[in-house]
Amino acid sequence: NIPSVQKVCEIFAQAGLEGVPVTLFCDTDLLTPETALPTHVIVESHTQTHPWGGFVRISDRELRGSQAKIQRLLGSDHGRTFCYPHGQFPVTHLGNTTNKTIEDTYVGARTTQKGFVDSKDGPYHVRCLKIETIESPNIHTWLQGGRAMVTYGHGIRGIGGWNPVGLSQFKAHVQEIAQHKDDIWFTSFANLVSYLRDTNQFHNNHYHNNHH
Image (cartoon, helix red, strand yellow):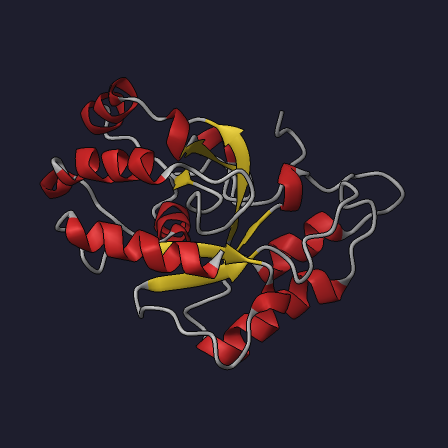
């Protein structure tokens, strides 16, 4: 939700985190040449139309076409990663090649599976934590254990998005992490995945089917 992302950037700035990278996984049919976003917002693929159906068969337009449109409008720093619509993974029977297309097109993919980033999952099944479920112990574990954590939300309540997080709840989350800003590496999802791949921190850099 583009208006929500603009509000997110405003809240980060108010908390002393101006310019922190923000990743927007966007249905790219919503993008136009007139779409205006701050320069530190990185737009990534969520397919073109957010299809339903467990990826039984998904067209190249939804996968490669989504990336092509993002990069045509915004440049090659965008559209490098992917987020599964409805949290559904591709099926692997009937000769489905969706997972191969994802691997060939993107450096990584975000799931809706709960948890810290785990090297065993690989770059195409990266776990995350929903902002409204994060509590102080999660943040302390994250900092003390040197863990990587991907957080996500579906918009800000009252502005837009599916099942959005409340504004006061999001502000409280940002204020808490701002207290530890000197101990946190804030980066985009694509830069995180690229770093973990380049430093061989994933057990396997390929798409795999063991993602339950």
